[in-house]
Length: 522
Image (cartoon, rainbow, N blue to C red; front, side, top):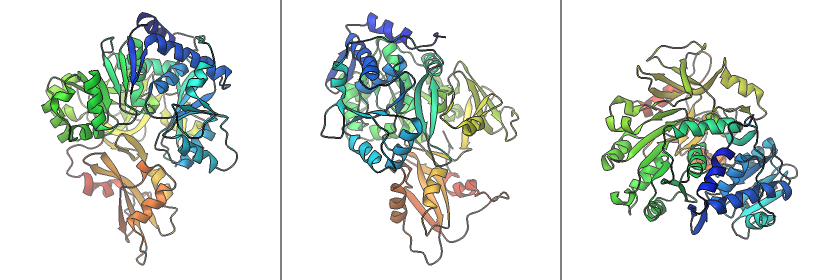
């Protein structure tokens, strides 16, 4: 079947808007025609120069750029399966993902080339990487430069992939201490785009800016939707609030996606002024809790701005529910919700035995939709666990009101979302528990004004132990990404509270921190 493939969206746009400047990247300006030429060359180069076949994985560890977009589009045209790497992964995590995915070709930029090379050199056994392609310039480890690669071949438009072929392998945090590869087919990515397109107006007049990292599923609307509709894409390599203000003004950006942390940093920047964002027509937020005070401030400053919220996860190619601009303007209790399911998504709230719960009762949020992953890469048991009786179990606890609005109240799987990044407490606990002086450990998310949540470790030690917060942080940082390292540590000598099943009662540990919060988890 070749019904839901990106060829039928991207190729017509390239022809229709051939002479239009559609890609603006820190001094680089590319037309739709030049973008198509570069992507078609890349497709051929992946095959002929790098030996990447349609079912092979190629990784990308780089900041936002037009080259990153070209790599995504090459994958969507069937040149291979893109494996976007989180920029904050520690060396052992990178090594695991590369080996687990079977990746042999990686694209890096000067920011991350040395870090990636160090990760491969410090791993056990020979590196599986055959080629390291450098995006841009720099005196860093690489085999070939990106520009030389695409200049070495003539353009080629590949045959359409089947909609059941794989397009993206995106790793997400693992509750067992190991990341899981989310396997996404072309069909899932296309349906996700259609879901987004029904709530976000993409057209040739839109100017979309990539500020959230392009390895994140939250960026998929901009990666696929803007180029398919003839809009203009502006790239910011790494988020910087001052630079963000400048780019929005300079290029008259109309749409963007930000996590609440970024919004707080933008509004709090010394150079911020309300008129500097006057070109914005739509601002979407998501991926972490939105502090009520910050949302109130944003809505008061920009009453005409279409502020919207999306809720989803990597496993759903991103989107499940949507809180509209009108709902934001209406305010009231539903402003604290995650919105209603987008067209094509069905929600069900279920208890621990899998029984559907009535309106207003809290249980696990489960969903059905065509944009869900096929499976976790090489993890059939983990796949079976989340897909039960045809429903995907999100691990989030919540309820649905009489109008169909979803309210999230907790995380069944104890996931922490800090600054838009997912942190699984079990992974952090697994690392800290290896310290010789740690008797017991629980990791929870606690409120943070800027980051939404911060990672907090509660550690039980012996009376005579002189363990310090900085020692725990340094120990953890050697094994996991910096954003997963606890930002605060609490030491106790009394055992942590346990349930009848001998599980730590994290709800009791959270109460002192979340008891006076107007909103739980988003």
